[in-house]
Image (cartoon, rainbow, N blue to C red; front, side, top):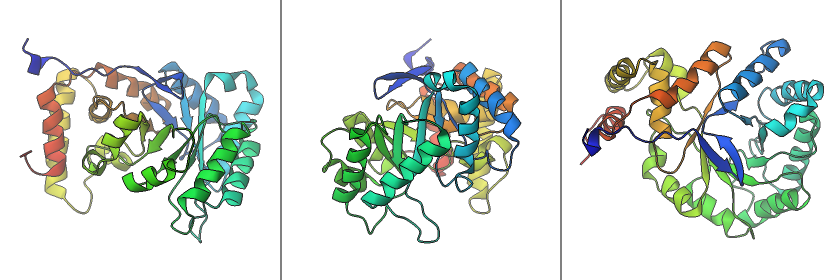
Length: 302
């Protein structure tokens, strides 16, 4: 086997703020509207595949997702120590954003009440608020960390320069970023964000790693149909060779990046949660990886 034929490393474990974590995370944004009775099975199945990072936000169902997770934690308080709990704040429809110091602190405190816990392991500003300066946003995150309400902090949907500006006003490093990344949404690979994450040792948590599910279903978007069909063709070819679903190939493609991307899966199907672990079994070569990228871009690399 030549070096180019050697499967890429898809390590199952990483770290977040010094804690061991699985490379896949489980997101609760689709909890609202589903039965409370299913929460325990979904979280326990996530734990079963090593996905001990549980991600939510105050905007998901206007607090309902946090309430649902908190209700389960109230019934199973011992499981709190088994999870790395992540939540986010700062989206305030219809304003639409508020990252002022008082608001972020209050939003985190409200999240803690809903989650029935005294702290989160990671608190993120959900989207950048143009009307709040980086210094004030940093002051809010510092207060949350100093008070013990957030063990670590980070940002979601921030650009490279917005991330750098915020970090300039912090006396401690940001722990994580949450950009949209998938084989269909590749901007973060080229805009410097993932390069910065490597240099700053930030954990990139990829939201919508299956592009809103279309990389699993194969349902073509309204635009870029030909390009999308080519991407699905490449994913299917690799999936067949590894005897997995194309969704697992799309997850494996993210896991293979050297920065240590953590895809956040959000399916409400216990079977699909469990099947996501097959992403680690994908035999993805360097050429396979670039074929997926080229198909998603709709052009060959220069």
